[in-house]
Image (cartoon, rainbow, N blue to C red; front, side):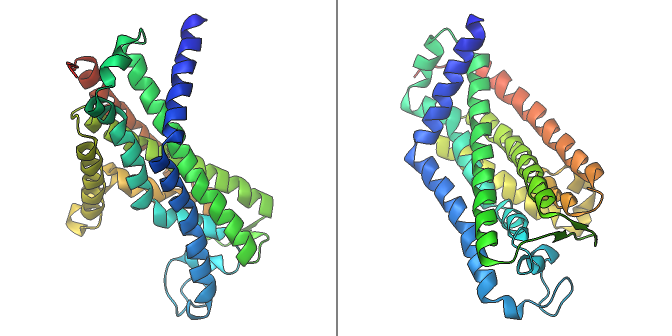
Amino acid sequence: MGAPRAWLRLLGSEVGLIFRRPRNLAMLAVLAVIPALIGITLLTFSGSMGDGPGGPGGGSAIFEQVTGNGLFLTFAALSVLVQLLLPVTVAVVAGDSIAGEAGIGTLRYLLAAPAGRSRLLAVKYVGVIFFCLAAVTAVALSALLTGLLLFPAGPITLLSGGTIPFLDGVLRIGVVVLYVTAGMAALAAIALALSTLTEVSVGAIASTVVVVIVAQVLGVIPQLSVIRPYLLTDWWNGFDGVLRDPVATGEMGQGLLVFAAYVVVFGSVAWARFTGKDITA
């Protein structure tokens, strides 16, 4: 039982370090503020958005539903933030996890402890996953509270036309939070692998952001549609399957498989690099 306790202590220390950094707390605060700004904007300009899906205001069906039911603000906020701001936030934390320690010279002392490189790498990754969950939850809670304060709330009319009770809608928000967290965890695996390749955290962070932008650009080129199912970014908005009756578990399941594949591939790259890396500083 000593090894699990030691692992949990190391994990607790890593999670505490992540959530004590002012930079990380500031990013969480920004993520929590943006849904409120989106809600206020939608409330202010609701008269020019049209009356529903396909209305004269155009736009996304999810956004057009917000003014009629505040729960939809959660789905709308996540659909916006998952495109860039959430990935950037995750890239900063995950890209700094190894490269940051190496850059300031503390990685050598961490490896001097009898934790082992594989265990340390696993702790770093799990710590980032906790941050991913916190970031997505901050967005969801902020959007939920803002939506309930600014807009009516009640049974949800789904995009497929059916209606579900309010509490069922809240439960589906929980499913969305877990799905988006899984997508961000897959991106964190990429950032962690890049973090093991350099001692400059900015390089790992910037490289991760570039990967996200390039994937998004490739995803909108019609001639490259054949590769879209393999792009991580193409599945981040797959959570809209919860807004259908029945829930589109097939599509969301495929997204989770893609996320898992990225975690396995880039997690293996990170492990191979980190376990054989020469730490001299």
